[in-house]
Length: 334
Image (cartoon, rainbow, N blue to C red; front, side, top):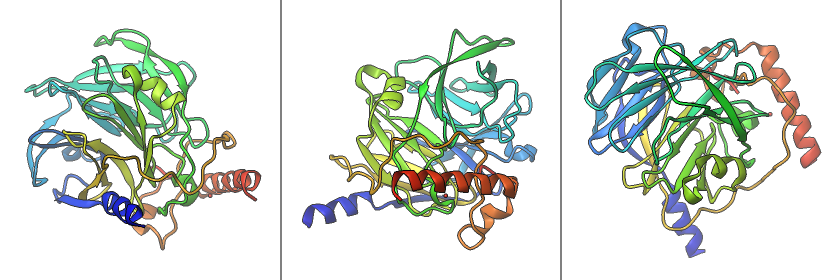
């Protein structure tokens, strides 16, 4: 009983600071630094939102960097040990983009460099970027409810050229019962990722949970495509959780939902948390990666901003229910 109480205390999130800048209405990516935080906003329709934002430890904006051209859909970011910031312009709700992009901002620079990439097997929606600690460019993890995968650049990134991506393996996360505004599909789609500062752990998150994997030998790809999570951190009822980052010392996970709100810190503790209540390794039926709407009662703000047709939502829910029927007896991206 004492152990359970200790685990519950360790897992309880603590508010760090509240993001209240009116330009940050749809925070989709987060990284922690020694002086504060770096975030990107998914509000690509508003020029004031299309920037890389640097925040101090009180979540106040102290610097912004504009893109030299308009990004399409910035969904995640990662910061390297030397201060380099990588932004993943990888969102594609309609799965219609011929290329995606990385924006690389060198330390102290005022102009990020654009690198274009292309998938080998057609367009994908994605919201998770993973930056290996050993150097090199980031990896992309797609958001498909049934066929999420890791894609890696097949060669060096060159400005003005398009680098092909290579599919490095499929990704599935355990099925949990964690409450979230999107129900079952919200527990299945990957909405963010982060690598620990020491490179020995990697985390993928959904709208409901974060799953931390060990990274033996620095191989992030193998960790998330072949490994089993060492711990599951429930992130219950975040309004629309798409961001995750490690603290600079790796002792906690940080998350923030779209919209103005607090950055939450989830202490990791010394030992892995308890496993999820329910697990499944069986793939769900192949479906579109379009995310479902939450119910109006559960997430009215997210519902009002949803672009997903109701028919797609119904199809996803039906497929999820069928899958559960086989196993035991329900995405939206704005």
